[in-house]
Image (cartoon, rainbow over the protein chains, first blue to last red):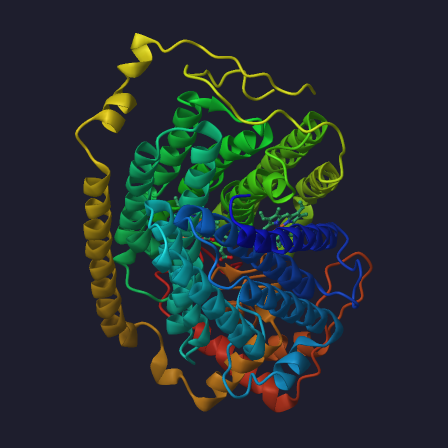
Length: 472
Length: 164
Ligand code: HEM
Ligand code: HEM
Ligand SMILES: [Fe+2]
């Protein structure tokens, strides 16, 4: 660790992993409710489990992004963080506010929670992903402002690199677009239109800047490739992201009351959105192939390459699958959507956060890399979680195709619940695969507790390497 | 599983002459890339804002706002504070655990909807369960008004059929 204040990243990473475990447990509860409908009813109705699942996902990714920024910004800026004390205070505020919100979801009827937390002053609750009570939303804004103030001042007083600039753009964008969560007009069409300014412009806009910056940072560290080269790639990738992704928002404006021309704008621009993801894959492999050193942390390199591949598959391929209006007409709001949502979130954002954690945690714990044994275990968890997610996606896609066929495409369409019953086998297979995912996650957590001799320190070599043998 | 070993291949002429290598070491500099980023982003932000502006103008003919009565607004709030979207889709957005409700008014009609909500949960063993929300008659009426208004939004003919 080059700067003492980077240490504040550690609690953020630990909290992220803890909440990740919670997210998966609630995913498994829902997965079971899909096939055993009255499981845990009425203690935990499906909608409550779903809120916990998705909100934990978002919150732990935010913990991961903030931890990443606290780790990266001092090193990029070559100066200590403006205020480590503020960073720690905000950590506890965010964690406690988040925990109280989840407890509120689980212990109170949602309508009662809304009543108690000021939803009558400004109604913002009850919209997918934005279910948080008003006070939690305000809390998120306060934490975000304190965080941005802290890292922005650090950037301003130190060296300004392209990576830190792009990371800051992404993080400021994240905060700015979250403000649309406070806009909830009575007009449902307008509500939906601007809801996507949070959701789409996050995951297919500003979050991709964060993703690119994290990946570029780790690639510089583990490959030793010249910063100029990596940062040029980064600019090309995020340019492609924003020129396709902004107007690409139109792929959500096909059937919600918005004008028909969005079918053209949305289809064409979002069909180009896989390109930056593909560029990211090429980028990761190309940099590792040109590496000038063999970093002892091979697990981090594996996660970085995995992010490249899986984000392309989940966002690029599975996104393209249903993004053209004539296809989306049939697949809109089916298990196809769920399949894509899972692999895209996992492949892009889960994996990039695990990449930076994999790289930074050993350093935060005083070593360049974990012991060989710990890395082998971590790489096992990589494969278990990643392969499980591929199969979860495949099973949901199969379920989705049948659902579309039986309920939407057929000349004798069947009711939703009747169709669900017929495709339950795929839900069972998803649930079993989910248990394997949880096993992979348990092994991941265990890898942090593995002892063994620390791997050798960074060795620098002059030759270029092949990646073929990099991953076991 | 074994810890992977790293193996180094020598720098090959073929690799250094690769297309990507040319692109990376060629005349396209980082500052040019940065300028393209700012220029490109600014252009597409403006285009998106222009389309948004045009959409705002086109919405009155499509979004059924003439029927947006106080009852509909109250119904939307009941929809929200009971987190209906956590199980159902509405115009295809939401959760995929329970049926689409954007067109449920047309599929089932007002009386069925009210009776259904009042009779939950079904308690059929193993069947997916919907909670009892204890809504008053007025709340049920408002909710139905909201679902009626939603079903009359011009959605470019979505969903493909009445089953949603
Ligand atoms: C990492 C990036 C991405 C993430 C995390 C992501 C995630 C998601 C999620 C969670 C949803 C469901 C939203 C809801 O609940 O209504 C969704 C919907 C959708 N995504 Fe993505 N996505 C990403 C990138 C893409 C890309 C690149 C494309 C197109 C090539 C795409 C196409 C779509 C489409 C068309 C829908 C709407 C599906 C429907 O009509 O039901 N996504 N995405
Ligand atoms: C491994 C076990 C998992 C299981 C069994 C599971 C199950 C589920 C279920 C049943 C839903 C609700 C679908 C519906 O609305 O009907 C859901 C939603 C969701 N889950 Fe998971 N999940 C798991 C892991 C994950 C992971 C690792 C991620 C993130 C990478 C994730 C992200 C999401 C998202 C974004 C949604 C909302 C999807 C949408 O709106 O389209 N889940 N999950
Ligand atoms: Fe999108």
